[in-house]
Length: 329
Ligand code: ADP
Ligand code: DP6
Ligand code: CO
Image (cartoon, rainbow, N blue to C red):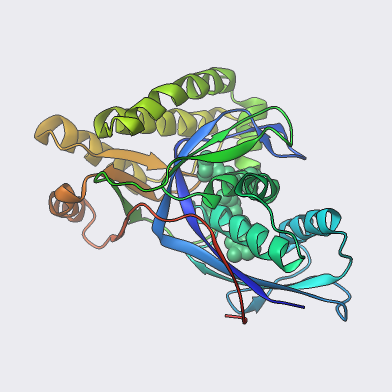
């Protein structure tokens, strides 16, 4: 069987997905808006093999256990259903992003897997259908099919819940300074964290209403290249999402003392120096500073004053999924 390799980039949500209206189909409670990143990605090769007696998933050179490959096998089962193929598959994946650290590895991973597996099975899906398929592996992956800014409209069914491009070529100066506080796997996965918040945090419904309402304002800010409005909306949304988690039963948080120091730094740089810099965090302690390339050196200097040894990486807008036929990587 032919090998297909797909490269998909991670995306960071500016307005977040944090809860499911349907957990089997992964229909979210909120529409979300993201920026796909050039510097972080997953590359995955898939080929079906009639001699296998189960799917074989290798991540960064390590053969995954049955338990660790559950989500991958789930997506492969969907591909088999769609294509009519019955054989098992080889999956070889490389993450160019820390795995399970709140830097959206599941977004690039399941977008790349959906792309490579569907093509290897003989399917040629539209980008909309690819987004729907990727969504079934990990919700945030629906947005990684597209480059630049994308919106995942929550929809109300398998057919109506998919991401679409808002602005794939980003020509205005926007970047995320990624502050690496801890690149180790988190203790509470995104899947578990959002379920806890949704089922037990008292403010959850209000957060859903606010997030859905903020979508149109964020779209306008993107079209107007209005970093200040977009940044404020994003920071507010992330802080509100992270405020839910300690009020859940049992309570939990992804943010550490160092995360809070970086969040405060963004607020101080804005208030005292008038620099447009805004913080956002996903399900992990690492903070991304939404900012302009022009302000990089001031931001880096200020960061290293408070956290002298902290690692950073600049992330810029990146492309959508790319799928090629060829050899294993
Ligand atoms: P993240 O913040 O990195 O998206 P999640 O908790 O959403 O964290 O997802 C992490 C999980 O995604 C991992 O534990 C693993 O099951 C899966 N994953 C990440 N990268 C890959 C990959 N390249 N191939 C298969 N599964 C992956
Ligand atoms: C905080 O897409 O990783 O990054 O659908 O259960 O796999 P599952 O969760 P996932 O959740 C992402 C949560 C987030 C916000 C976002 O990316 O929108
Ligand atoms: Co994830």
